[in-house]
Length: 335
Ligand code: CP
View: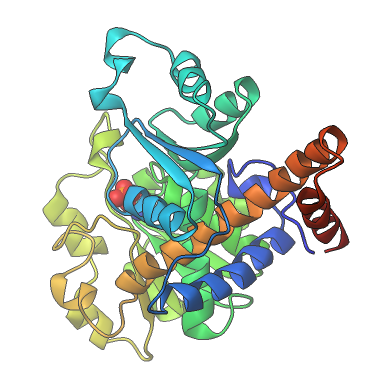
């Protein structure tokens, strides 16, 4: 059996192209399962997962919860706003208290870059990063690349432009690393103030003219302006940003070829993308959301597989007389 190389999913930078392909192949199986009348499989029975969200989320949170339910995991949801964090409890204390209730895996979103790496060093559970500040959003990048693969038949050699607020976007960074690992060509496009100088060191092209970028690409991933992360003004007004970098039907129709439109959500309709483009046949925005469930099922399944084997090997030593466990251990070892 091919195995995921990491115990945690903290960022795309930590995983290999083989890991990503393994996630895609596993997600293919789960996608066919969740489109059946009976969508549930027992793969994560007896695995307990805590969803710990210190920041708002719609898609990621619901997608993880649905994926866990489809895999028959036991789940507990934690939201910072209704917890004892407001009374001054630290991140490690909060999570260790949750783990004391025998939790195997933690899915965490946190506003601080590096929060998941910190947690992985200090607690025993497996950690999945559901977005840490301006740093990484690895499951978003995996579901985005999976959606490109599904729509265009592959990722290698495809030209993908990421448009907008690159400086404050964890989606941009994880997407760039993921797409480059899979052999895509990547460009970023936006105002100079929203493109960090280091970005060319990741092997991406930079373009400040939206029409040039759209003519170049096969796929345009339109990002939201992250106003909540901007402490100063990076452009004069949203209206001006929209005039220069917003994607509307006129711009789309003036291209010499058809392109695929993506958006990680939440959309600011009329700013980075107009409604007629977001709802058009060119957009795969809701396919991305659908693929999020299968992709996240694959990730949790693969991560649990590593720990399940470790756990069963331990059990084999302790309870050598249990034939059921031994059969399962030898199956996992063989495959
Ligand atoms: N794409 C994404 O992370 O959306 P949410 O913030 O709603 O989870």
